Amino acid sequence: MSNAEGTRVVAQSDGAGRADAEQIPDAERPPGAERAPDTERAPAAETAGSGRSSDGERVVDAEKGGAEQVPERERTGAWKIPGAGDTGARTAPGAENAEAGQVTEAEKTPGGTPKPAVPASADPASADPADPTDLTAQTAPMDAVVATAPAARVVATAPANPVVATAPANPVVATAPVDLVDPAELELTRPRGLPGLFWKDLAQVDFGPRRFRLGPARERLETVSQSFLTGFNAVIAGETGRIDDIHEELRGFAYEGAGMACTTLDVLTITGGRRLRDLLSGQGMRYPHMIHMGAGWAYARLHMRPMWGIRSVHPLLRWLAFDGFGFHQGFFATDRTVGRQRSAGLMDRTRRAIFDQGLGRMLWFHECAGVDDVILRIAEFPPGRRADLWSGVGLAATYTGGASAAELERLSVAAAEDGFRAHLVQGSAFACASRLISGIVPEHTVAATPALCGVEVDEAGGWTDTALIALGHNAHSGDHYQVWRAGIRKAWARRNRDS
Image (cartoon, rainbow, N blue to C red; front, side):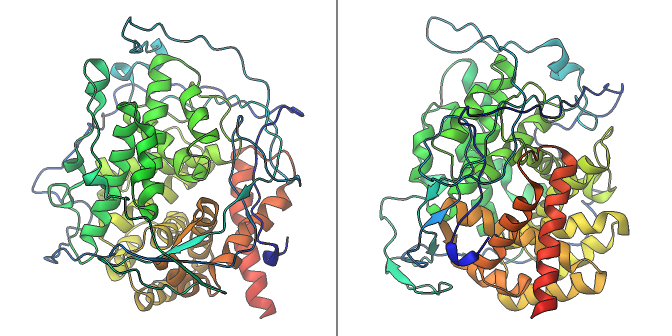
């Protein structure tokens, strides 16, 4: 696929064809493992990891204001789920899944509030955080199509006056809407009754009580985390449409939280994933990577294994739920997951690798985007786990930001010295593809990609398309997901060899 065409490969069901997808059996749940509480904190005597700390103060990492657009050529690439309208005419490879079984809806109260009906196998009281229920996803038909998405915008922000950001080519100045707000400023109505019990306090993501490292990027990363919880609360409040009132640069994190909320409600009300599918095919269709990661948060919270009870999600991107699962475990069970370097039990090599990618993303937050501290933290892990940790760090550094280009170049050098530069690049390319699909490419992503990948955003994102095309039309398994990642690394290596 030519990057000049500005296309993005997508997968969607239009009912045109069906193929049998992998059905993964349930895993037995081992008895007696410890539970990860909602806001787990380790004893004061034990630090999360090696015990390093810093006294850095908050610094506003990004200011809000104007924006700039990348070339006005047609950008295709919203990964879509059944129900979304197709605007593209060309087919692209994806995966077709087996027809899912019929699912009954939960009873509702006179007021319209769904009654949670937790199945016996999904009972959180009998589940285990380190060893949840296994994945039994049955996916619905998924024919690969290409849908048209708007040209990616490069967001650069200032307090009042819009500033011009540097785009890869042919920049066009555009002013960001003035009615967008920070997540903490979005006013949502907390529902009464049972749904109100799911409401999240934004203070849960304060780095101080969590004993994360404090540094210059603290306020930025805390704002990102608040966006996640705001998206979660928007779904719980029945005001999902308000997510689009959040600043464009932060909106993807809000949709990650929305994915967590939809999955939580779907599992508890036994809907088979109806809310999650509606989000993926509707309002959140430009954020499929983030929404699938958010689904993994829900399973971690319910002490279950992705993707129990959810059908008809994307056959390949569904594996990103294990990425979100790993991020959650690192964030809320830091001493166990980072300090003692434990991972969830009963996971095969593929699931553990994706889990570690999510854990690597979390390390970017845990070390407050401190490049030197991230390097030291990864060095504490066994060599067999570092490759996937580097992948997650590359994804977070490019998608979330928080470090300068010079610092990211040091990160790239360290990854090369550790023997995992290609994995760092692969994670960064994933972030580029996700940003391009959303149509919003922030300035920090534009700056990070050359430092980590040696190319611009368009080319790095195109590697994901090339690797996906090579998988063919029936990519759906964990092995296919791993081959996809390997294909991105090969594309980068081939580019370096030819240059």
